[in-house]
Image (cartoon, rainbow, N blue to C red; front, side, top):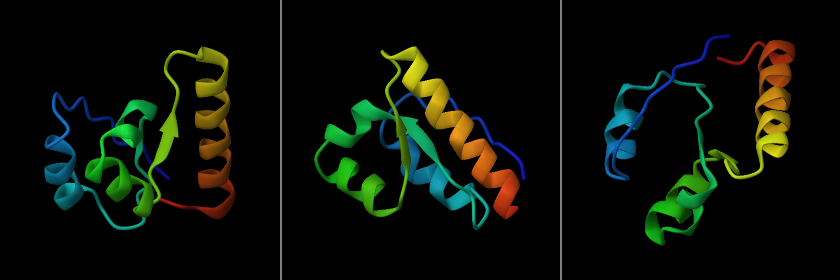
Length: 76
């Protein structure tokens, strides 16, 4: 398993990153993207994992759970 960290500056960058990200890669995005209309729906349908950056403990829990799942299932 591996992690790709992308610091996109606009919501449109996400569409470009989708072309570059390898198959079976699990994207993680800030929860605010969920509320951006069509972009939020597209992210949700693509099974993007959303983290709430304002609640640090919850964000750490989500990322830790994702990492454990990636290691357990050997997901890239």
